[in-house]
Image 1 (cartoon, one colour):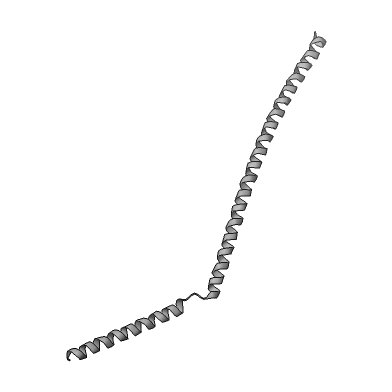
Image 2 (cartoon, helix red, strand yellow; image 1 turned 90 degrees about the horizontal axis):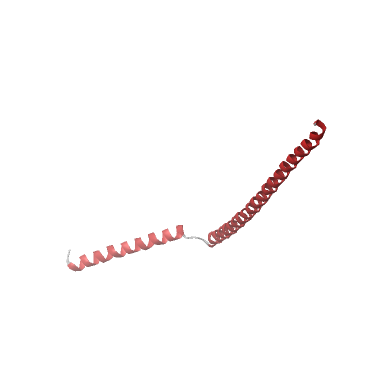
Length: 108
C-alpha cells in the first residue's frame, strides 16, 4: 500500500464516519424532536400551573386575613367576657352586701 492508497483509504474511512455520524444525529433529532402540539401542551400546562399558584397565593392571603380577623374578634370577645365577669362579680358582691345590710336590722 503506497502513500496515495493510504490517504484515499483514510479519506474514505473519515467520510464514512462523517456520514454515519450525520445519519445518527439526524435519527436522534427526528426521534427526540418536540412537536408543536407538545409545545402547545407545555404552554397550557405552564399557564395552568401559573393560575393555580396565583389561586393558592390568593387563598393563603385570604386565610391569613381571616385568621387575623378571627384572632382580633376572639381577643375582643375575651375582653368583653372578662369585663362582664368582673361586673357580675361586683354585682354579686354588692348583692351580698345588700343582703347583709337588710339582714342586720332584722336580726338585731
